Length: 79
Picture 1 (cartoon, rainbow, N blue to C red):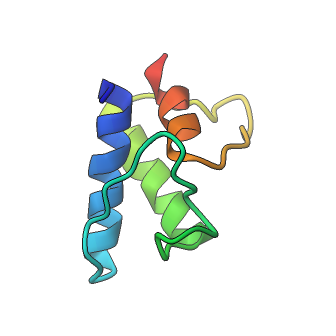
Picture 2 (picture 1 turned 120 degrees about the vertical axis):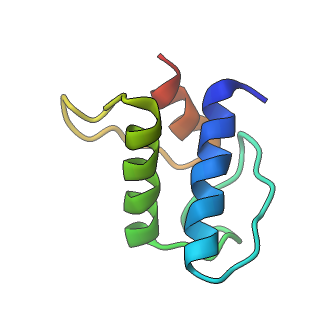
């Protein structure tokens, strides 16, 4: 698992714990919203903020970047 994918997993674990839900193992193709995770757009926003805090990176500084999967999100924080 790449470092950025591990960061996504850790941030997701935090979101799931805050919702009182069990941790779910994800991979690059896991859909973040609208899939089986049970998170919504507010949870996703929290996930992104957690990743920005953990990595010190802001891939959205120049504007919104569309992503749907855990792998796409991880790629944004990999650079």
